[in-house]
Length: 145
Length: 306
Image (cartoon, rainbow over all chains, first blue to last red):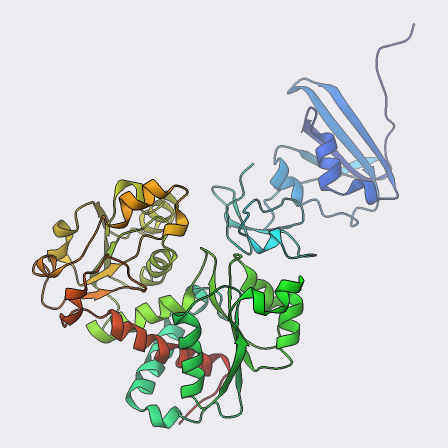
């Protein structure tokens, strides 16, 4: 009898991003620029979760100092980041809101210099940690989804 | 190397020093007449402005320096599609300091990131206009003798008026400041200014619609123009533009030591009959704008005059 499950093997070193809201994994794949990585990346969509019903998981096999995951704090601070070494979870990374976000989100203010200046990074700065407010470094427009 | 992007780039102490320098310049202009000899100011104005460009140029000329620049994007390489970062790299080879006005918000900041000379933000869209705020502060200091413990009335377009927002940011750093916000409902100070700045810092303020009501309580009345370009529909502009007209009759309600400021240009919001009132400080304000820009140029170029 074939069980209706899909198994993705363990990774020896890298990250397991767990508890991603179902359907959001490709977005995170894009934000983290995982397409640019040469290493093994597994995306699991709609995995069963007792806590969430359904969830996405991303496994990235790479050296652990290879990636800056601070941006995840901005995308969804409920994501669990497990750090793997020798196939074991050695620690969990606490997600914090990054102080600055570069080229992840774009300024929507049509009066902002980022709308015309070529090659200019889109930089957002955390201006209010409590309210999780980010503002464009150039025009100070508040970022809204 | 320092630039000026926002009025908050200077600490209160640095600001005091700058304003004191401006006062010294007013008192002893001859002492500073050659302080910038051999230095060049480039005025990079991507949109027209009479007052701001000329006051920067007058400031540099008063300091014995020279000026160069352009007064519209059409007469610059921007018309050929040159980026701000490339323009400033080029200008850095020609001038010692520059003042930039640009319709796009944040353009002077981009310039400062690629510049090897100090950049003064001379207005970037509806965002910042720090030299106007410095002018306002020097005017208040000169007419009142202090920047603390006073009631400031801000009247007119408090919604889109960047000079009002910048002035609030600058004044809340001084103790004992209270605001009376005088505007029609449609042009109220935005929520992010009321909540994130005034409420957050516990600055007392009240909002009123009638100017007459506020007049007796004020130390300073800061009038603003309702700007046509901020409205999407002409009908709303026409309805708002003459909402407040300060005239002789209303001035009778004000204390004898209340002064009227205006960033200019004015349209109808201050009747010309008020110009003769000794409390009308808006043309003196223009003069102070030159002194404060002279002080700013000296500060950014790190030139000291004994």
